[in-house]
Image (cartoon, rainbow, N blue to C red; front, side):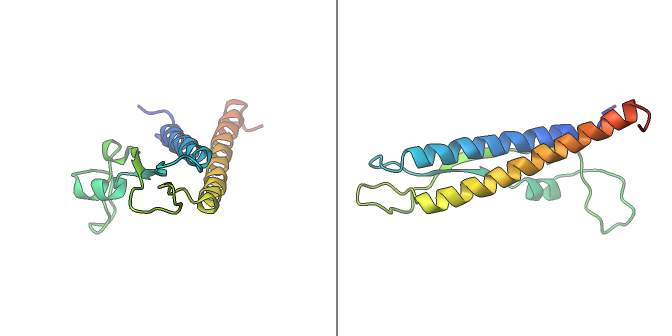
Length: 132
């Protein structure tokens, strides 16, 4: 029996993704002047497409609803190199403005996840204290 319904595991995997993305963006910014450096990105494998295409079961109230299970909904990501562009004369393809924008967007995403986890823990504290 999963005590928390998988919420904490999902939030944990999402934080792992956001951390990996932040590390990758920071690495790209640090290598903005490195000759022949190719920018990297963190991408999800098609999690939803995998979930839809596999045989997954859940309580469905209508035959048109998509079935889901925990195994196929695991978050997985990978780091890829972007080799198809070149912005600088030295073979480097890091666009600092784009990277800074992605960093800001990722920080907002990360903070949202942290706020959601804090809300979950706050709810648990309320339940443990008997609603007080």
